Image 1 (tube, rainbow, N blue to C red):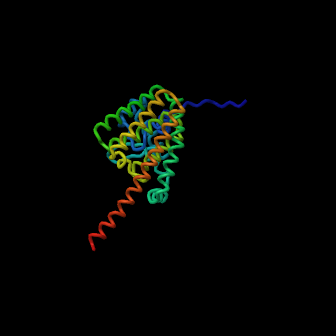
Image 2: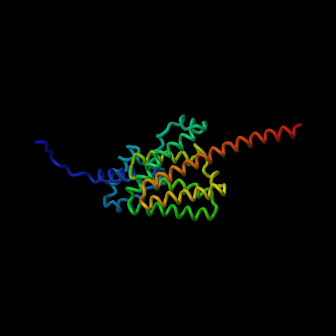
Length: 255
């Protein structure tokens, strides 16, 4: 008969599996610090030696990393998504910017559709909370905060889609965006008309997801990213025109 004896699971193994699931589901994020050893052992209800064994196992797997005098952190598990050479190519060629936006339109449209169908009430509260923060940042006219919350809003939707592969893929993509590999979002949020339009678009996306309307959510994300694509194209043209105008001006001054 195809049966085997059941062996009790070691406490350290149970701890390892719990932390792995928290990382997989995007609850523990890259760069996040774990609680101090004593506190974490109490939260998990295990001895400190069992916790140390689990942490050592997770470090060996590359999921946790120790920082001297600072504690244990979730490793940068996204760092290997793109090679440094490919990241440099992305940064140096405009076509990558528009391919990136096209990729986001496809993936985030699907994520918004899934979020409208599958999100829990708590997921919707998280999205609404970020939306409320965006409203407050808009009133303060703080481009840095608006750009940061823009990313948080979109990531909250992706998290609410409950697809861990999509979650980690898009988190990696947003990390490159935060580092300015594709474009500088703060530039967009410095323009009054663009800021207002972006906020309105986020309101429409949020309303569709809160109403659990998948088609409307998909359409709202698509319209939003089409606007971003056009705004970036216009900005690039304006930058080129300004560079030419400066050349003319400098030439006239030197005559």
